[in-house]
Amino acid sequence: MSASAITATGRAEDHELRFEFGKNWSRFLQTLDESRVREAEQSLQRALRLEDLSGKSFLDLGSGSGLFSLAARRLGARVHSFDYDLDSVGCTRTLRERFFPDDSRWTVERGSALDENYIRTLGKFDVVYSWGVLHHTGDLWTALAYSTECVRQGGLFLISIYNDQGRMSRFWKVVKRTYNRLPRPLRFLVLAPTAAAILGSTAVRDLLVLAPFQTWRRYRERRGMSPWHDVVDWVGGYPFQVANPDDIFDFCDQRGFRLRSLKTCGGKMGCNEFVFMKENRR
Image 1 (tube, helix red, strand yellow):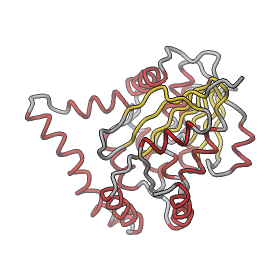
Image 2 (spheres, helix red, strand yellow):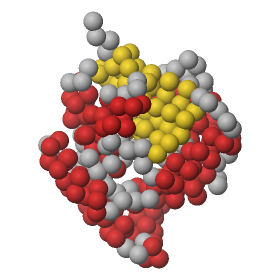
Image 3 (cartoon, one colour):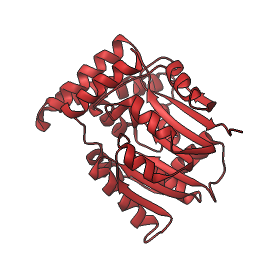
Image 4 (cartoon, rainbow, N blue to C red):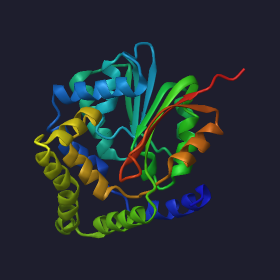
């Protein structure tokens, strides 16, 4: 599907349904402890290939729970966090007040990745981080274009975008739309079998190799999030768009970015993670 076609359909869906990510993150914060915060810091260090972020500015575009804003701040960055979802903004503010009360080097506010005027007010950052966000805006390619404008020359752009699985992606789109259209008391009819399929299969596989819950532990170490909360995000996450790695690479390459690293999901369900560097122009 072309970028223009995705954009056209995305805008219509954006007004139709929208999953409230912030309510899920509010529940996640109840389980947040020091070990998870440290895991998030380590995953950020690995992805950016930086031990600390002292003296750097960090934009968390779609901050969600605020965990990675917190990780960046603890690594020394000046952080600007924003999210469209009011509950997510509240979650991020909760973490700021819990760990960095009255901190002038961490700003949290509501904003939209599709609001060009707002994006222009933000300025340029050394690191722009947007994990699993842009494909939920309802207009992936416009959000991606605006996001690239926030990266200063020589800066890093870390994004993750749902992998395009073709027919399977279209199937998940139906599942997500169905979940969001159901009354809340009935949403378990979609969530329960999906969670069993996703989490149950990995649990059985780990048992067969005599390593119970190994996959879950590794997932938490990589993302700093619990598998359960991400499954809820996966089932509910709508609007929902996808892209293949080549399209993301070409899009960013045309805007002066060089691919620094890429972690794919192996053509399966999930996100491809990209780290780009914005080339210095003479």
